Length: 266
Ligand SMILES: Cc1cc2nc3c(=O)[nH]c(=O)nc-3n(C[C@H](O)[C@H](O)[C@H](O)COP(=O)(O)OP(=O)(O)OC[C@H]3O[C@@H](n4cnc5c(N)ncnc54)[C@H](O)[C@@H]3O)c2cc1C
Image 1 (cartoon, helix red, strand yellow):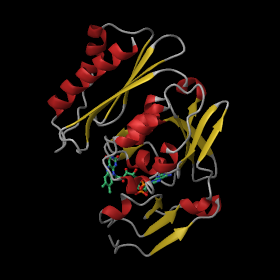
Image 2 (tube, rainbow, N blue to C red; image 1 turned 180 degrees about the horizontal axis):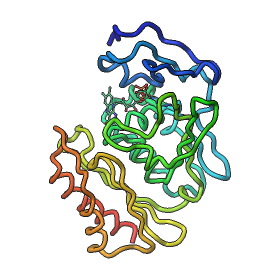
Image 3 (spheres, helix red, strand yellow; image 1 turned 30 degrees about the vertical axis):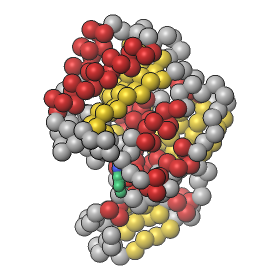
């Protein structure tokens, strides 16, 4: 759609050009920015012209530029030893969008938009990803993606901060993972997503997204009993409410999916 409040779209070519004013916003794939009016914005600063390498695979793990498209991530060839790499496709498919959107929508745009059904948020949190954030003073800081997304359309990013990349350790990628998702309709937006992952110490990490207003990471030193897991899920108290699912339904579904994940990985 035409964004009639905008004065300009500025392409950033280096960090100095990444300065954001009070009515500026970073532009990534634009799949959300151009999908509804943005009356508070007068400038978009295009990140895609910065030329960040989309994907870097190293012995330490996976580094994804914020501007990496979902398509590029899904097309990443299998990496030997990454038992949980299948989560990429599972999470990407939970984004209720045509594959055309995959060509434009970015990892950073999805996380920074901070919708409960943020597919790449589910992926990143499930794999204990760290966000590298560029601060307006020219510095940088690191924060788990799990705490970067703080609520519906809300993040810990301060004004002027830009998500530069998302980093996932090879260790997190090395262990088996299980994915479950439910939606009210076949092609509906995610109502609840649960991802489980074994860890190096033989524990289980269970991540809840879509059903809650922000991601929840439940970590157990060993595979919990069904009752322990259920109690941990039921202790969550921010079940999301919108036309894609009522809070009590999301809670019940999350309990059920979490148990399926536990059984698969036990
Ligand atoms: C048909 C359709 C279905 C969709 N379904 C879903 C869905 O199921 N789940 C879901 O989560 N979304 C959905 N979306 C919304 C959106 O398309 C996705 O969230 C997408 O991943 C956003 O990425 P983008 O690169 O296009 O972001 P943009 O639209 O470019 O930006 C989104 C927001 O993030 C900010 N931003 C972008 N990059 C950065 C950065 N590096 N640092 C700081 N801020 C940044 C922008 O300023 C903006 O506020 C859907 C959209 C459409 C059109």
